[in-house]
Amino acid sequence: MKSFFKELFLYNHYSNKKLIELLTNQSAHIPEKTLFLFNHILNAHEVWNSRINLQAPCFGVWEKHPASQFKILDHANYLNSLVIINSPDLENVVTYLNSKGESFTNSIRDILFHVINHSTYHRGQIAMELRVGQIEPLVTDYIIHKRDK
Image 1 (tube, one colour):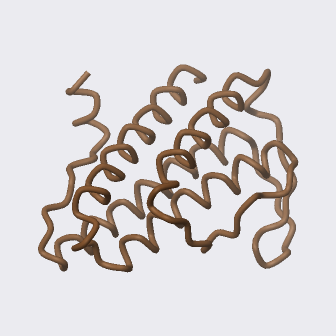
Image 2 (cartoon, rainbow, N blue to C red; image 1 turned 135 degrees about the vertical axis):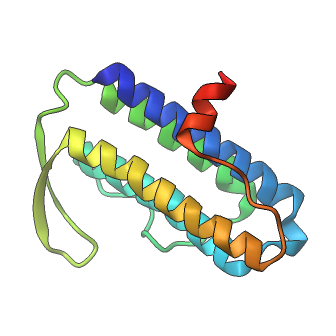
């Protein structure tokens, strides 16, 4: 299972890097909602890593960062997730508070899968926003990533 999660987070990191490149190269034409959603992807990933590590998150889930920080934030999220994946037992449970202050308990495994699913979901929304802005979106499907290897 750990090797599969490593593959998933490599895919997530790869997709984010491609998206960061597009956002940087087309910065004058990127719809504001696209930046809003990408910031959310980065922030939520950091928040979930922090919850697993029983630490206070550095960012709110809707916090805005300058595009110049995207690579740094994404890389830090990726490395932190790899450390988590290498932890002794992904079946361990974590109790945390959500952004509304409500308490929940989930396994590390389920949280890691949620991070991937959440990121993919919002990259799909970003693709739609780019099309609205008449920018050709990236193809970031997992299977395409696997074919490119």
